[in-house]
Amino acid sequence: MFEILEIGRLGPGVNRAVISAPDIARAHRPGQFIILRAHENGERIPLTVADKDVDKGTITLVWQEVGTTTYYLGTMCPGDRLQDLCGPLGKPTHLEKFGTVVGIGGGIGVAPLHPITKGMYDAGNHVISIVGARTEGLLIMTDDMKKISHELLISTDDGSFGIHGFVTQVLQSIIDRGTKIDLCVAIGPVPMMRAVVNVSRAANIPTVVSLNPIMVDGTGMCGACRVEVAGKTMFGCVDGPEFNGFDVDFDLLMKRLAMYKGPELISLNKFRDTERGCKCTIPGGA
Ligand code: FES
Image 1 (cartoon, rainbow, N blue to C red):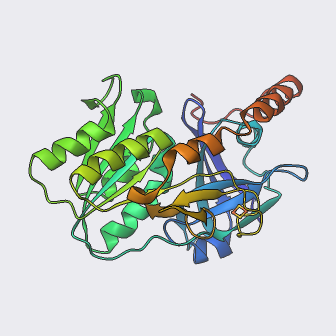
Image 2: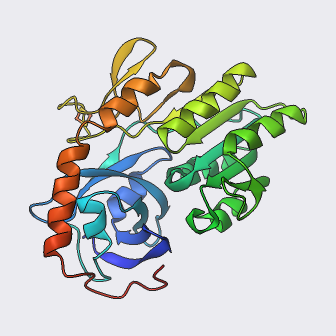
């Protein structure tokens, strides 16, 4: 169980792995996530499921190397096994035929956006996807997104690929050309989601965001994932991860995400000092 069947780089510091997890593949719905421990003494980290293959009994995880565990995962090889994999967790995305749905993914946020967009596409919506990154090398899953979008718009902050600008500017251009948008789904860095909400709120477009608070158990017991939505305390793991973007206190979310930056850096430096590089050559290594 939980054997890594494939692992490789999608871009600098961004990895993708296909994991054997038949029960999770069968039960998973768009919007849900898993919590894993890479090894016996490892911390628990949440990752969203970017794709799955029920027939093969696999799920695909995509992650960015930002802390000890995500760096450690990048050193694992095909044939290695994850210690634990718990899921699917969280509420599934509400899928129905809304009309025109714009999915907006920034950076690594494209990974969780992918199954949601696929669900919206399969539900009969006209899907417009906006995929953005700081620079061309950080764009991920554009081919995957193209397959499940009626229109795909790609932007980079530095103009190295696609439209030169932020995803919010691309969204504004869709609004300005007169396209009636019935729903926006935005996933990415917190400042990006907040900026998208500012644009969509001005145009009165309902907007769903998927939040990434710090999590421990993922089942509503520890309270680590507290977020404030419409003035109420909610748990990202069981009440979310998706919320009405108009109601989210993004400032508080950013503060809570920064709470453990110091200890995280100490842990990462210790890991880098002891780790003697990758255990294997990652195919297509960037
Ligand atoms: S992660 Fe513990 S309550 Fe949500």
